[in-house]
Image 1 (spheres, one colour):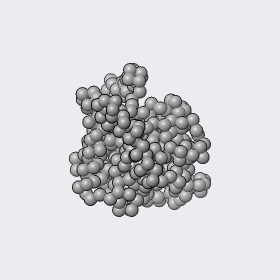
Image 2 (image 1 turned 120 degrees about the horizontal axis):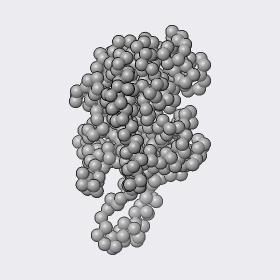
Image 3 (image 1 turned 135 degrees about the vertical axis):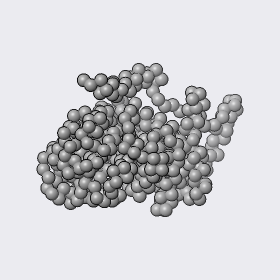
Image 4 (image 1 turned 90 degrees about the vertical axis):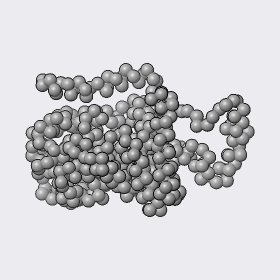
Length: 432
């Protein structure tokens, strides 16, 4: 094995070893800490009984006051049944809890959002809908996570129509936002346009179905799309339901076969399928057009190693991993999206709000300077999250789905303060 490749493989395996070593050391990743000062036990007369009864009466007379007098204003639930966790599949709610804790950690650190991991044993759609309804009085929003397809599609639709708080499925909408942002930047690097590119979608689970929906809304043309799943190229006539409707008009050339045939003559490969590294073979990428863009986003191992994709002629390569260039990671999206949603108390998260978030990410990256290995901002750039949250909040106000309306200065000050709060808490706790 080439020494450079061996070194890269060792680097790729190190986070897993460190995770197993450090998780038990800290006993998980998140905890609940107070927001108010306790100078003596007398303070409980204000924060608890008898003083709290006055606050309860206010809320009883006007339920919306719960957003002003409690932390509901800044709290979301992360709900998962553990049926499709990362690239691990149906490992159950207990095994999914470390992922949801990690998600809560990112929500707080990058968006200042308090998130409660709720891994549940309910797996039927009606059970999950009932669960989310039951807990909704305690939360300002719900993020559903790592739920198997196609159940996740129907669950999201039902929750969005039946709950009075915003519901977001990060594996669908969150992924789509960051993929769209990264693709817009990649098109700038290779000097191509969304309207003209030919796209191969590899893997048609929740992520790529949502990716395709948002890409079509953003300008990609369905006649330029070829979709491929584990059984080969998907023809719209062979698929019923929402996926068949979504693919209507795709693959007009009538391509048949598998991934190699789907890739032939395309400009972009967006893969969210089986973990690799041999799901996509290097020789298959040579069938793509010049200056090809490859998003190999399976976790924990991409469908093809980035260096192999580059060696096969890809101009821009992205993965879902933080240890490689161009991380197409939902963490660039969901903390700021919920920050913007909560700060104007939006009733829902619309496609237009998602596109506004993607535009903010891509435009920020462009101003910072993009190239083949830098098509999205890094996760440590606080300014990007501020701009993205503001863009989402403004779109919510424009679409009349906000319940709080702020001028530009008020909105920026509120967003900036709330995002900064997460890092300030960690700085005080750990001295970093």
